[in-house]
Image (cartoon, rainbow, N blue to C red; front, side, top):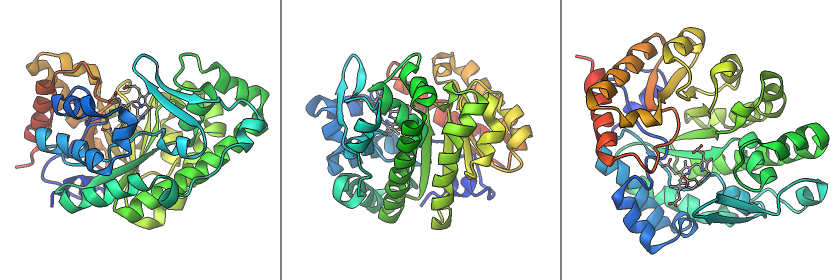
Length: 341
Ligand code: CP3
């Protein structure tokens, strides 16, 4: 069993810096494309054998130090009672969008073992064959709320802010229901065998600090507090974290996952004494010539040294256009350049 990743999360000494990548299973991989030719994305998420198969692909092909469950942050939202579709052009579509008390009352907090049994079954299957730790995950409450209110992705997040500023009580009610959903969902994943969990706050970076402290942070804190006693590291990814590092630290998460817009050395100096850092290569830096890519890896490894610990990752997910060979090279380089002699 390779437990380098778990050790790094706990700030214990490690022989090299462990690496895994957000969206490490996905369309940039021919092996994934082949499975996807046979089934649509949601069916894949709901078929434990297939979900386990694509979860294992990057572990085998890339040699990463952790696996992340193959699923999607919107799976529990569907279980709350919304209609979910993935369209090739638009990405996820959720209907009807939550814009008032009436829609909120139509939703419920799902019971994971009854409503998303396939997620727990995928985890149990994976634990039988994996030689690296398995990461479970959930969207953070605010990020899930944006999808539910917008009815999918968005550029301006107008309706989310409209809810914040014109339908405050409804929006807070939605966040509270989501917090309970996320707590139950992650607890069930841990009980099924997830050895770490990551909260994805992909869109909380659209908030200024004051609104972040009102609409995002308190709910993340509640989730972290609820899960703290369960003995698995909690990772918090906040996309657009540069102006929110102090707040991010207050979440109480063991590992803070940074996007690429901040110098990891600076983050290490400001919050790295109190948390392990994860990140933070620009996903598009995988397009660089190999030598320049290696230099970027070296810079990040060096910059993170001032932190309690470091898990190498991208600043966001691997993009479908990235060549598989570049991703393989990245993983090798992190291992080679970080090995302690
Ligand atoms: O990281 C992994 O390898 C595990 C699997 C995973 C997926 N989505 C698979 C996926 C994880 C952890 C996610 C999380 C997720 N899903 C997030 C948070 C992380 C982030 O990227 O910010 C978000 C915002 C979503 C919502 C989502 N799912 C969108 C916006 C899209 C469409 C955009 C796109 O890339 O197609 C998805 C679809 C999706 N989720 C795919 C995969 C592999 C592509 C589906 C396909 O095969 O067509």
